Image (cartoon, rainbow, N blue to C red; front, top):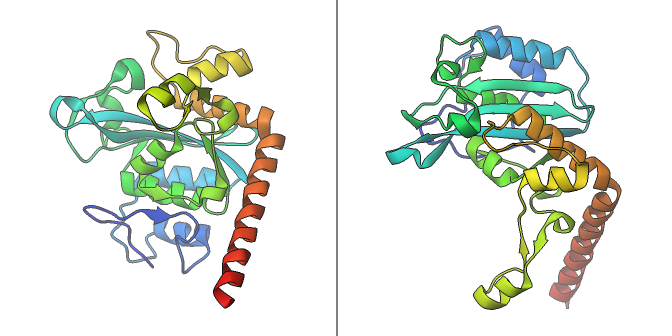
Length: 258
């Protein structure tokens, strides 16, 4: 099998990892200690694995992560909590994540995370390697929904096929058009909008209130609901793009033959 313990681990591709055994059989053997592996196995990992494998998980999942600050003045972000929700808005995984570096800013006012949440003695936490492993299996072959997923996937050090990503921050109909700024400063005329603003406008829901910490469960649910109300048009756009790519590839192959 392939170990994912590295000092600076390379991104895992959710479409190819793990690659030797069926995903959950591999994970069960790992949790039982039947595989030689550097990956530690915590009680929370075993509980999460048991909950996940005892239920049916559909094709669509919503992902949201919370970060804490590390490094000088806490300016760098480190993964501290991960929530995965299914299409029926039921929680598949919700765990705190131990941070390897020294946390210099818990960002509690935004993240809602306290120092006690990230200690190894907290039975609701697991290592980043364990979390990364579970999420990589969960996302494999599935559509993943979220807001600014590039940040979440980067924090998890995972990659995911672009055609299976539904990001409410980069879905053009949900973006802000700012032609004046584009003309003045250059670049795209579309700008990302905050999840809070989209939830209020499209769902008539108040989330991430001023003075309130973010909830990854609430944020994952909001992104999922934003996808649901636009899913027909969204999937039509995705399929059109796929067809365009196929046509472009065929055209290139034809030109190469000529």
